[in-house]
Length: 446
Image (cartoon, rainbow, N blue to C red):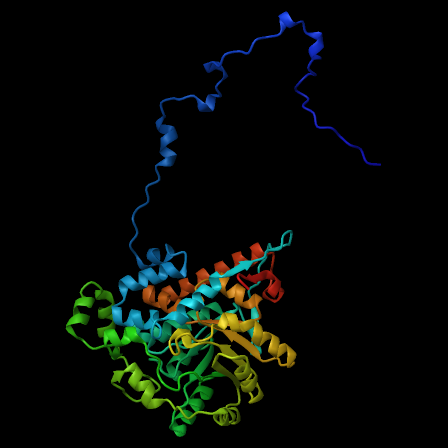
């Protein structure tokens, strides 16, 4: 039986019926007085004992650790990086091709979503671990291949690979890296190291790199296929960016208020492409002279026969090409427009993701879908996972951390992303990566 209990206040007595009170006896409204003001609202002279707890003056901290700790977002790490890095290497990282429309659109794509949270779920423990290409990763994000990394900051690939090892995530070394395959493997012996390959016109040299990667313990080969020719990276052209950086009047003036970068650059081993012979010239000239514009799917077949580990194709920008590379033996694809650094107005990976996911499900393929370009927060990563990505990769985001503080800066990037992801998932009512679905995200305007 259900009882209905009426709310009551036991400290009050029932008011008499108004008809029982003679009109002459009805009390008049009492004027406001100081006695009716609550004690907390009466003004008084503050006591020192009240003020003392409020006066918490912290000693200023100027250490690298304090500087990085104050950064709460990847954007704030970018601000630090810009102050500490000469313009040419910073712009090489920060910039994109032509008018940089692709990069802006890629970042806007992550902003143009609406999360759809579920409530009353147990999210006391958030598990961010996942599996990618047959092995576990503690976080659903890895470090993408980036060239010339020691130019951004002298610790370069060593900082990236060691931070990835500590975080329990994959690290991808670029063919155009400034640390060798063997040195990276030695620096992060317990990490999961992948190698990114640009197929050269000289197949013997490509084969040599593949063999070195296998011997050093790399379990995944990531072949990049969107660089038949170099994109028009106009910031690099305007800066006269060369490898190694040239000491012109402009660069000397630029260095005058960034002495730490130049001190590190000049007191460490000269900057070279560790997997290539010594090269001097512009980045575009190198790409145009070394990479092969005649590549076809037959070359992918050759790679599949040659490489015995996992094979991933990076630079997929259409559903048709995603299907075709899987048909030619790829174990996974990276939906990527090279960070907007090749073809301007290229397709946006985040927009392409649902179509590729649908095509793979329709074709009953279990090939992994990875995504990069535009990721600047853990919320971006969660959105990509919800829409069908198995994994994500970051390039610029980790390089901002590297330029802001070397290895410690990369660690800080990963800490920020991990905290972002855990918070976003908890607020969505999700405790595991596998629980994310397209129902958690709505594309605005679609």
